[in-house]
Length: 91
Image (cartoon, rainbow, N blue to C red; front, side):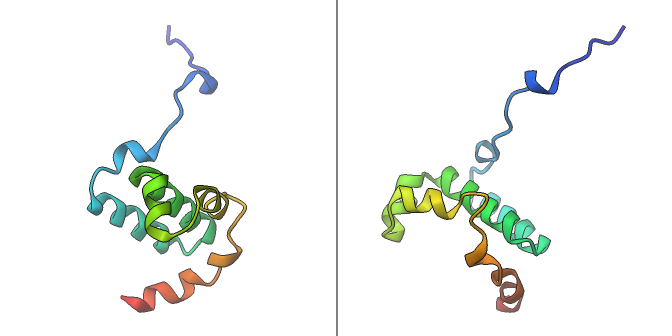
């Protein structure tokens, strides 16, 4: 007999574990841009920032960690709604 596994018993999936190189990050962002979905792009940017280290990204951008966390929150997509429209034109 096959044993059933509850979804709640499975470990959480964390994409940052798989983003070890700049190529991995570029691939993730490329896929997010191809979706043409601001929510997906926000999620990808946040994942990439966490993979790199939120403190390092904050320092490099001149923003606080709190500001970055707010910017990459799932409900914060208004600023990115037009980016997928123009990004493919940038090459």
